Length: 162
Image (tube, rainbow, N blue to C red; front, side):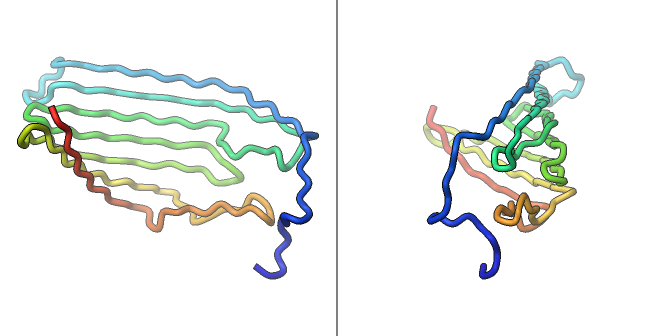
């Protein structure tokens, strides 16, 4: 856009004078329960949780990284008899330049034997409660959210040979 300052190819002179230090920790856990619940049609329940902490230290604006200090997710997958499944997931992060992010997902699916393989049909609803269209990192760098609504629906088909 006219009048906006920006990095020009003709006057861009990168150096290696900046310094950045990234430190952090990530924790993951997976649990699975088979045939332990009292619901007759439920075969397996799987739980996954993860958390990450990243600390970034730099002395140069252009060396700053765009990651959240805290982020994590948790999801449950339920496998039922008769090849049905459902899932529930939550993921979120702390602020990146003043904007945090989180989302919920709810899914359902069915696998059907068809010919020499299996046809899978899966649907998912994704909800972002705090969706923001964009945020500005600097005068020359703006991050755009490519999602055009707070709720999005997905439908997927797959076929695998046995």
